[in-house]
Image (cartoon, rainbow, N blue to C red; front, side, top):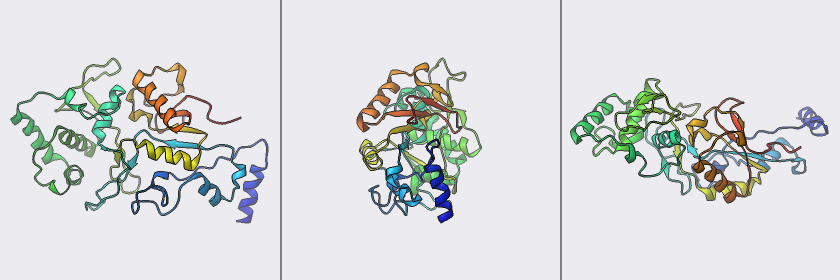
Length: 298
């Protein structure tokens, strides 16, 4: 321990060097401050706790970059063995589906309740039910539980959203992340070669490989997280969940076109939190990011 601290402080004491300290994710799952007990982590997750764990004085802190995402996540309500459990909510944030995220992201919109109905294919009821029955038969049981809970064996009154989720999860089960829907028809957009193709952005956990749940943002929780961590700037990761057209992009914000809804959203986020957004993360690679403001203080 002493040898490790000596090595750490040899860098901290060097005026020509920076030390980057990366902490665990999950301030929203914090033992003390998340408000979701008992569906929480086993420890506190904050800037001050990270410094304390590392043996670094708060006086040494130059800045804090807080990584957030537009739509918070939680783990699945289905275990790897297929048991139905409850893993907590996200404050007042409404639970969304990946279908809603996928469709909204394709047009750079924020998901809204009537969105899918705008693209619904007008089938006769019997024809719609035929597609539904086909998806019930081919969709894996664990995914049916994810959609319908205990009623997965013989679901009734299947909604358009549930049908779209079955369709999506079937294609996901066979490794297809791009597919054409039987239920909705997306209008032609200039940036899409296949205008009716849905691109699935869903995620699963690293260990269990179960699909994550996704929620609307509870802005009050984010504001509280900013109070706890006092970030110098926000790194808005998973920006592609707001706009698929920006997926994987790299460059400066002023050189890239953003529709008005996206610009309004970013300005609103900064206004509510009082914190500048320095970077938009657009993908998993290190260079997939859009620089909005300076990230590191000089």
